[in-house]
Image 1 (tube, rainbow, N blue to C red):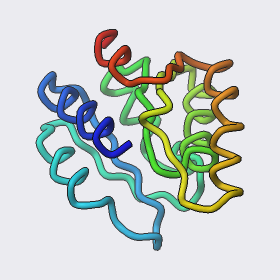
Image 2 (cartoon, rainbow, N blue to C red):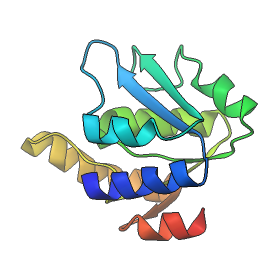
Image 3 (cartoon, helix red, strand yellow):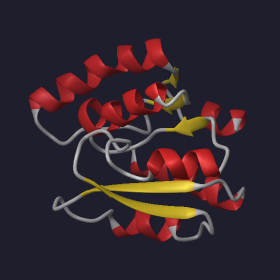
Image 4 (cartoon, helix red, strand yellow):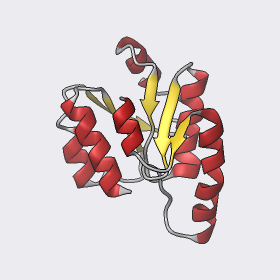
Length: 140
């Protein structure tokens, strides 16, 4: 998953696409490998959130509207919870979502892994979802 995220973020930075980094307040910082890649973008925004949904009580929606963004490539390590809740928020904002199995993950543990696999059908039914991230890069 990390290699796929790094590839997508490198592509986004190279193309000067906006990159929003969401961190759950009090739950640690983005890992250094990802943080370094996101900082290559001139259009990076760091958002600290209090809720799973990255749109709830943050400036994310306003930022994306001001940047004229209508499609989000969603990625993250807490797929069945934070990533999915933010994807739901994006849909409520009228945005399209794209992601892949290789871009979302879950912390170890049988429940979280099971919930991640269960969330794949939600992503597939509500956005552009694939097994591999390369198709997403090709479509951007």
